[in-house]
Length: 201
Image 1 (cartoon, rainbow, N blue to C red):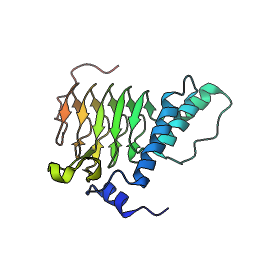
Image 2: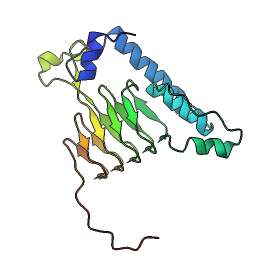
Image 3: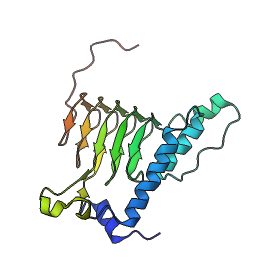
């Protein structure tokens, strides 16, 4: 299906209009997928992964089901684990690496791509805001005005503490720790660490 010029501008981080029928329908689809995920109740791991993939529109097939529930769960051990509830605008702009854990009450405004690297841990009530608005109120103009955004990129092996807010255009380097309650407005890089003085077990 051909992507409209308006949606292409959104994906490029340029000014676009969010209240076109196409994008309203895309948000509605994602809201419905999130509702199914958030209200799934007690389901097995495979069903959980399937419902998550509906949200992010990941059509890659899962490995064939193993009749042994424990063995089947083992087949999916590299899949991300996302607690409920979660709120996402579009879904198709969310990219999670293997073994990512996202705790409950996460919000993702995925106007542009939000990428979270492998083995990263996200605490409760963390918000990722890739969308923003013009600062000029005349241009902003409520729902009739344009919006824009910038990609968010989180490296591998990070830990994002609870209630942190990650703003548009932020890149967080591999291995970083973001303290609980932080508002991250610029690039973060991990500081070199001294060797661990404790013996390995």
